[in-house]
Amino acid sequence: MTDQELKEFILRHETDSTAELMLHRDRWPSIDMQVAVRCIQGRAKARNKLPLWYAEPGLLYPQSLSLEQCSSQSTALYKQRFVREGDRAADLTGGLGVDTWSLAHAAASVDYFERSEELCACARHNFHILGRDNITVHTSEISREMLQGIPSGSYSLIYLDPARRNKGGGRVYSLKDCEPDITVLRHELLRIAPRILLKASPMADISVLLSQLPEASEVHILSSDNECKEVLILMLRNNSLPAEEIPIVAAELQSGDNSGEGTEEFHFTLREEREAATDMAAPSEINGFLFEPSPALLKSGAFKLPSVRFGLKKISASTHFYIGHAPVELFPGKFRRILEVLPFHKAAIRDFRKKYPACSVTARNFPMTSEELRRRLGTSESDTFRVLATTASDNSRVLIVSAAMPHVSRRISC
Image (cartoon, rainbow, N blue to C red; front, side):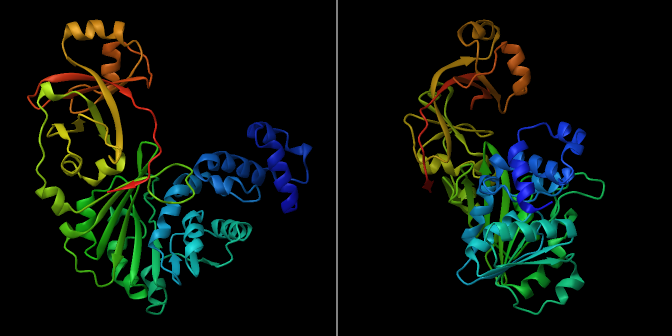
């Protein structure tokens, strides 16, 4: 089977049932059907996650787990901002190679390390097809002994995305439970390179990460498609910034964006958040516009600063939604026009379905889940209207009904 035969087969059959292809594989004796099916399945997942990879039908895809765990195109491209001109970089946890490929666009050279021979073979093939000939592939497992064999200063930037699954296949979130354990290897890594870029679990606690990594100098939290995707930590060899002074960037990325830039970025420090004083909206002041922070901003822990910077009021101390009397285009998140505010009692619930038979339902800081509330209200799903069930600053329960604003393409930084 030649590469050209495989490519033509994939393009001809990528919408076919892979189960049927495997069942009738005898029809195509020259095709390695397992490889072809894996590529067809991989391309289906890459279509939205990695559109630039999907555009190249000659790429190989190994086991599905590596594609599920790899960075998306937008988060991979974002990492290019950490690369300086002339950098010699190393990706010590290569995997499918998406981050390596992205770093290689900006770095002079990148060394890709991966312990799986299958992944290395696929990566070597794919890097060549993608025109990234400044990448060298190494089949190697990262360990203290392996790192000790690398001369000091061999690289200017090292990137790691430690495996976040235990031996039983379960997910782990603590750095100490990931493999490799960077809390143990960080001194050895910083001997080899003055800058370390670490990808941590989006579930990890930011304050815990900073306490475990005293060399941390920046934190970047990335979200897209209404979900927090990645937490990135830049470590510097001789960093002396206290945790409260470390710059934190909450960036909302546009899926499929080839620039790698955040469409909405919010920059702050933990000290600024701690010292911020915010006003709470009285129930009678809940009108005008409802502002919802991006997932990255929520993950960052900047709950008070948005109201200070944008002149908004919080609904309550524990409800991280904001109220304003006019649209704020620079706000890092979404905003909707408030239609009405209803008290949460039997009469309002009884009449709600008549007025809003279809709406999106969200419960925050409320004694019911969103699904429980949906069943209680008896509504079907729709994005035209949205009801936020929450607790106001006077501890009363309210239903805030809002309507979507026209979409505006934004690229902002604040």
